[in-house]
Image (cartoon, rainbow, N blue to C red; front, side, top):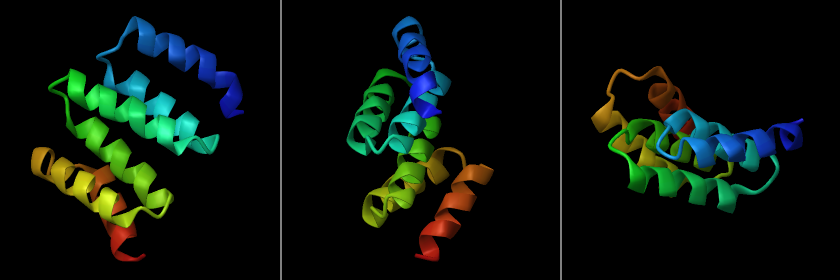
Length: 100
């Protein structure tokens, strides 16, 4: 259950605010709980905090694709592709976006 993971991930982000993995996992859990606005806020805050931009752009794009926000998804997936052109997650979500 996503709700079981939520407090642990929130704690992880507090302890490691610049760690992309903690923030992206928290965002995916929030999104699974239909809290996509909060998920986006968590990721955008991470994007502003670190030079490790690709994981945040990928997660923002992935969440936006799943929620039907195609323009927002395209913007973030394009940014991720510039940073990490061979990333399989970027390719996967860009393909999903094309098929929408």
